[in-house]
Amino acid sequence: MKYTINLIFKAVALAMGVAVTALSAMQQIPTHHAIAMLGLGLACLSLVAISEGHVKQQEN
Image 1 (cartoon, helix red, strand yellow):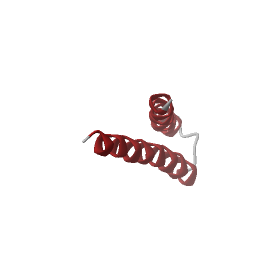
Image 2 (cartoon, rainbow, N blue to C red):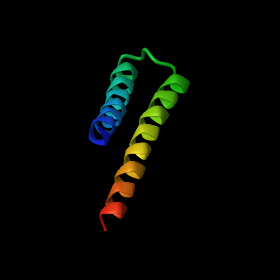
Image 3 (cartoon, helix red, strand yellow):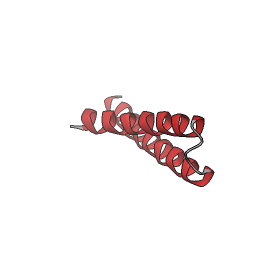
Image 4 (spheres, rainbow, N blue to C red):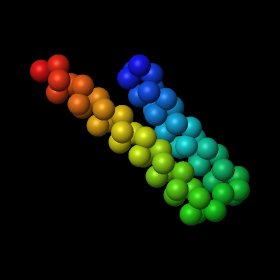
């Protein structure tokens, strides 16, 4: 279950990065929206890092 959630968070982060890149290239997104989307992606990656770090600590 935890693997699935981490995979979803990683996919969301990747999707946000790709979407911001594509929309910026087409000049279809305001800067403040792009920053918000990238922030959401970064938050997802942070949750994955915390979760995976917690799992590694329990294994030791």
